[in-house]
Amino acid sequence: MSALATVERHGPMTVGELATHEQVQKPTVTRIVAALLERDLIARTPDPLDGRISWLKTTGQGRRLLQRIRRRRDEYLAARLKRLSPNELETLERAAELLERLTEVGP
Image 1 (cartoon, helix red, strand yellow):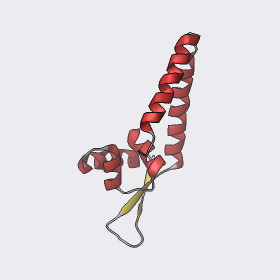
Image 2 (tube, rainbow, N blue to C red):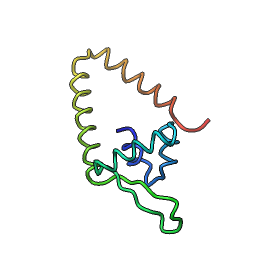
Image 3 (cartoon, rainbow, N blue to C red):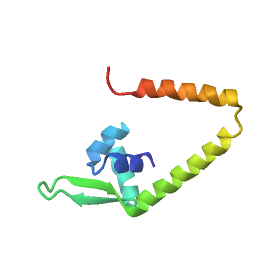
């Protein structure tokens, strides 16, 4: 699912670009791409200018699957957050702010 989400977020992209994003070797990502293609979660389109290159993009079915997964994850987290005390929620909010600062791009 990580590879599918990467193609959705950064695609269209080549197999090599996907391997770089996922930080795996090309043979590994080639197997992942084959499984995603077989399940019709991504599509492969040949490059019109360079026949050696093909582009990967998510299909409607792939986008719908990601939406379902994200919705279930959000529902799960919302239910878990309801169990926290106000103090714990405040601590979590401060931690989220720190994490956002740590992941900001730039100096």
